[in-house]
Length: 344
Image 1 (cartoon, one colour):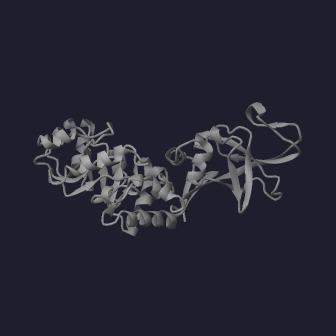
Image 2: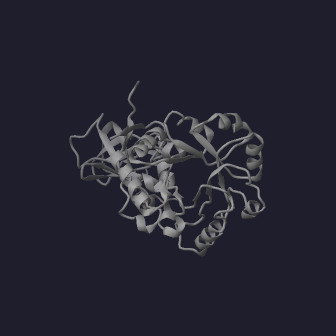
Image 3: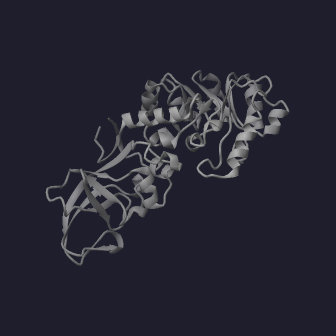
């Protein structure tokens, strides 16, 4: 197998430390982990392995294909998108995974098929997925083996009245479904306090080093660092430009490294002239326009750097989101398949 000229350095200790921080913030509630979208781009199997080893027992994916990829991981998985007709055979046979039923149709489909344990999502104000609280009151869930009753906060990262209204609407359902547990808080929801934790929290983005609310700033450790290999080092004479449309002009003779990285890998054009590469404590500016597969870096300060050497890209999620205008979610899940993922 040919090694890629791109790699993600993934910090196992930082991932586990972030989960333990979130677990402590969850108080008496159990702390799970959202590992959908292939572990937010890091690789779900390895994320699950490291977090299960640290004591995490509840994992959440989006689809049944993601659940099947974890079939031999030895953990319990909840499938957040529930069950379509096309999913039923797989869902009924999957002993390690259960659906999060999201609609009246899904509830009926699961019941009529004789499905076993399930989770249920209730819409308390987000208007995305979930049955209505009135459906619960009308007895829709009677007879179902509900493991976890869930809802999802629409604006947990903001101080808005909707958070309290959703919490209160969800709390009013306690004891009305036979569910063993209740779960409301995502990463930002954990920061809202003990009233939002209920029995189980479901952090996602904060596990991977993001700060989805101010309270997380400085508390979550960086998990992901992209690195790219240099294809060529070249001298750009003063007055000449670099890259498409020559958007950067050399103010003096400048040593430039062209690296194997571009917007096809998730390093998007918004980093043109803004991003930075790192070599130890040296900060090296990205210059010119980021293209599909290539990015230029000013390496004048590092005379012995050349073809085959590696540069790390500055990628602290909160800082990079502020720099780029992208969300921390996009920055993380957009990192492409061409990266080798190396845990250490």
